[in-house]
Image 1 (cartoon, rainbow, N blue to C red):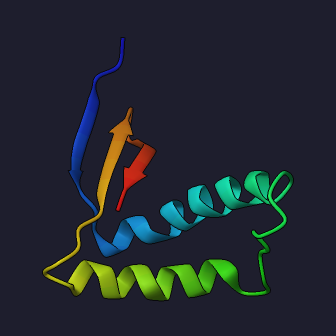
Image 2: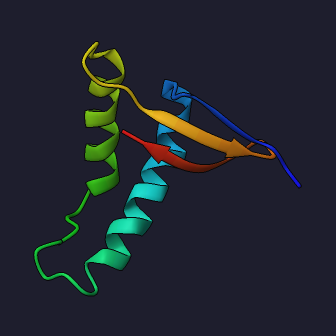
Length: 74
């Protein structure tokens, strides 16, 4: 069984994290009309997450397995 590693996110993780976030929201909008993805949603999420990485009051943790991201927590 592969071991899961949990660590703080880096700017290099943000593209993969935005893909995970987008997939989650795409599924969620199918059953919740309050959720609507707009054009450029991934880029906007990356911009916000970049700010979060530099904010001392926020942290992003990532879980990885076999050198690929398996999840995250903000």
